[in-house]
Length: 406
Image (cartoon, rainbow, N blue to C red):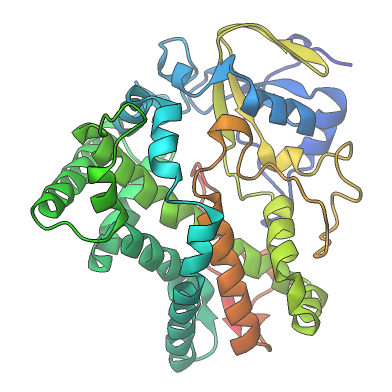
């Protein structure tokens, strides 16, 4: 087995030959160098994990944390990023609140039961958006008509944010997640503008609170009876708004592309809609782009893995998407099995830092897929799947558009 120190660092992110396919190098790294040295666009060195057990351990191990990414010796993704994208003012504020404390205060609003109660409204919204797409006529772009506006509407409603401001969020999100397009000055300005916007919204809610999540969090306290700080409320609103629309919009688009790229998949779901729940989980596992750049961690101590040691002070990239294709963890990992069960994929992470909003994302995906199958049974891609394109230079590798016909 090759040692990562004996190999030339791999440029990261690793490009894929086709938009819906994983990089061929993933399989090679899992076999020959599962703890691989990589080089970010900044030139900084990090370590890439591609095996399922390694990634799951790294995401759960207390010796590997996100908070450490603010350290001066942590790798920076881009050369002009003096503080690091993952150590932004928003991230630092949430870290200061205390991760476990913050999750307890916010997580109770994102339970599977609460999200299930929102599902009928999600379905109504999807129906309305599909009405508009049908009026537009075929072909139409799934992203602009459905995948983007649906999660924006849902998260704005949950947080009590005017949906009319969604273009602002889209611009800020693009700035935060782009690795190469924006300067540090532009990124800093976006962080300031977004924080200012959220602070103003929270102040308005203090004057006239509603039933929304932000209003509820303002009145909430932790186990010791302490409220969330004002800065924490602002950062929480930012984080939930960004994560609540950006990631789910990308998942809806990729789900549509994967299910339509091979017609038999769509037809199987038409014949048996009871597979919708397992199909959503399989798309989340199968998609090579869903977790984008991967999850970064900082090693506060040496950590032993399957075929190597992560030295203390190393920045680690946990590739959940590569781990989800690991032959050691799955039967036929490169085949999409819509009835696959169990399906313990790592797309939403693992352990204490797993995605807080995963019940929301799962519910939205199930809701929109059910409505699409019912309303648009003849849905097809309007272009060859190989013509689809991703946003380049982004931490999240979402599609630019998904043209469909019916």
